[in-house]
Image 1 (cartoon, rainbow, N blue to C red):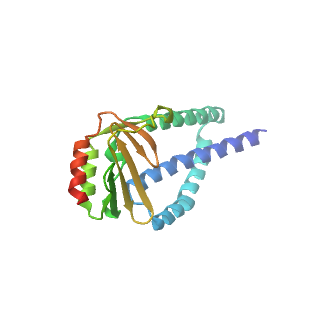
Image 2 (cartoon, rainbow, N blue to C red; image 1 turned 45 degrees about the vertical axis):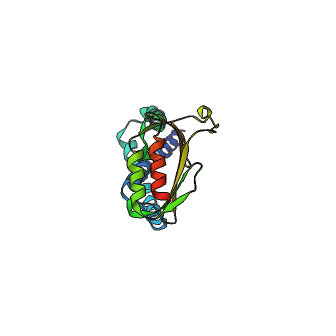
Image 3 (cartoon, helix red, strand yellow; image 1 turned 135 degrees about the vertical axis):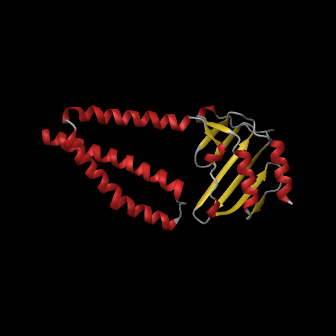
Length: 208
């Protein structure tokens, strides 16, 4: 029975250390290296040959150093703290420019549509850089799905669709003080609404 409990604790610790190391790797990867097909393969190799062995060895060392009686409490505490931090991070105030991140080295094109006007696209970096500088002045906070009002009739808005190579796309739709990320749900602009007069001028400048 003791062996079964010990094996269970060891397995849980391996999972915890794996998640921890994987999160650190993912954070560093997103900050330092742009994701594409080649880097995905490299990332996979690092996970197999570095992250998994590191998690396994860390769990073994942890079991040797820490008394077995308190391991269960630590595991529960780690999971609870991780869950709370995840929720806090999901709903904390964030900069719009950070969320709609611009990867200059891999930028391919920007497609833009000011609602009610013809869409346009640009391969040059200048429009994207101007848009990012503008968006970076706004702070946003995630909304629950139930808080989102789907009625957007009569509201001025735009969508921006950014392509990075063949493997990554970013899309955001903004309406006044609300916005939608295609990959991350609904957000409210804390210091909004977004200045649609600026957007209208931006659209006129680059849609010709």
